[in-house]
Amino acid sequence: MTDTVTPRDIRKLKIEELKDFFVSQGDKAFRAQQVYDWLWIKSAKAFDQMTNISLETRELLSKHFVINHIKVDKMQRSEDGTIKNAVTLHDGLIVESVLIPTEKRITACVSSQVGCSLACKFCATARLKRQRNLSADEIYDQVAAIKEQAELFYGRPLTNIVFMGMGEPLLNYANVTEAISKITNQKGLGMATKRITVSTVGIAKMIMKMADDGVKFNLAVSLHAAIDKTRSSIMPINDSNSLTELGESLKYWYQKTKSKVTYEYVVWKGINDTEEHAYALLKFCKLVPSKVNLIEYNPIDDGEFKQASDQVLTMYMDLLERNGITCRVRKSRGKDIDAACGQLANKG
Ligand code: SAH
Image (cartoon, rainbow, N blue to C red; front, side, top):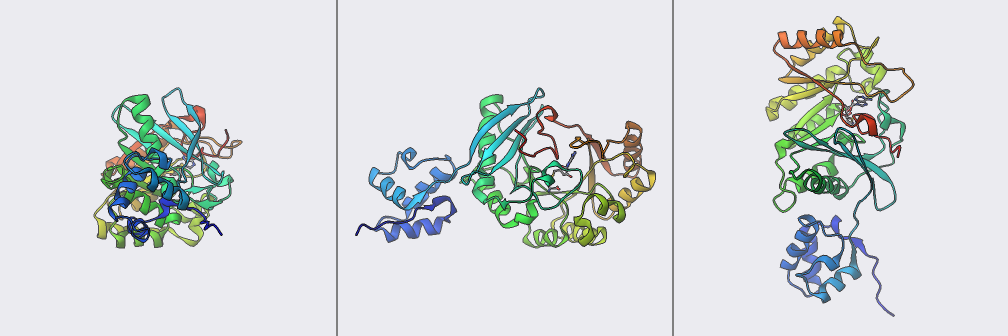
């Protein structure tokens, strides 16, 4: 009988497990580090690329393992330079990731789940039901692919990463944090943690866990309304996770991390465009040191939601700035290719 093994995905192994594998095969433990560098620093997609590993060892590896890797199947480029990638995962599911160039930065916007379970009324991703969490290496690969594109198309390094693609990162916390640790590791992409922002609908329990874990990346909360009734009407998560609970978790976050919170906020006509809403936002902002990004609305539907007028945005800005809260209007990028906030829905 020939001995057959079902190959496992080698990128799911921790370095210690890979060392154990080599030792169990009568080889040296240091081999694991060489292979790990190929996998995580050089993004090798096949064992044959590992040229400083002997042919015999490469054959042994191919007998026991596969390298599951994402494939960027389709790339679209916006007139403003934004690039959207349709990324095929090893099981054929698709997510999207986006490269956003500005004068000073190149930002990668990555997905954390296939689809999303949160049902925010204004977001196109909400229409794709959640199919599964992305694994740490699938998240890492999106960043590595955009890093390559930044160098190839813009001749500049990737500077920032935002978890603002498809899905809710805090509902896939373990894999998101594992990916971040590989992205920031010198034996990975070596990016600075302070250049990474995780954006969430604001799951209080998870924000407290992040605070306890002492994470060093930035936190952004998609607030959109600081009045419960309004927030619940557009973001169903608010029913079981009220603004009071969210506020308490943010106080805990600040107390533990001393890291400012960013609120993302879209102002819609007839939904949150009154002074009462602006004052409620101001009050919420005073809970912990914070700043506000007023995001331009990217229409995704037949007109249920409409961006409020410039006067309303100015009213919000004036009120916040007068009271010492930094507030910026964030223009959409990549709208023409459906790559802007809330537009990722695998339309291509
Ligand atoms: N689930 C996470 C990350 C994904 S969404 C979160 O909710 O934060 C990234 C940002 O885009 C969020 O602030 C979200 O509220 C916002 N967004 C969603 N749909 C949008 C739309 N149609 N126009 C503008 N911003 C939108």
